[in-house]
Image (cartoon, rainbow, N blue to C red; front, top):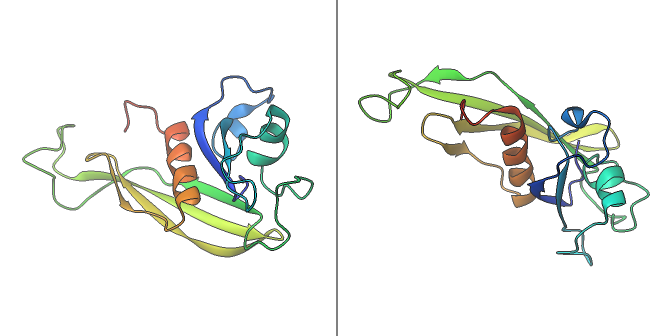
Length: 153
């Protein structure tokens, strides 16, 4: 689960996490804060490690008292072949598009407040269904990047 006010921008190499691949976005990310009054601020390394990449950051000085979510969580389904091809063939020799579904849950107090699914067409390289919140969408993109090697995307 990542902080709902975190806008990841690039993958952090190392970052000090013992098991970085277990982090909510599949690795550590640097980025900026979007919390009211802190828009665009670049969090310090300590904040990235303890709050931004983990969510439920109740001790973070940037976290507003009034908020809809405490954290955002993602899960990925294996690619499925669906629908008609993009063209005669979609580049991988298959006649169907390969689509992955990302399930998301926006949580408050460890309970889901909003949940749903986003879809990415691996064959065409574009989102079929996006999230309306730019932060959640960017987190979904980072999660997908962390979990799908380039050769699969």
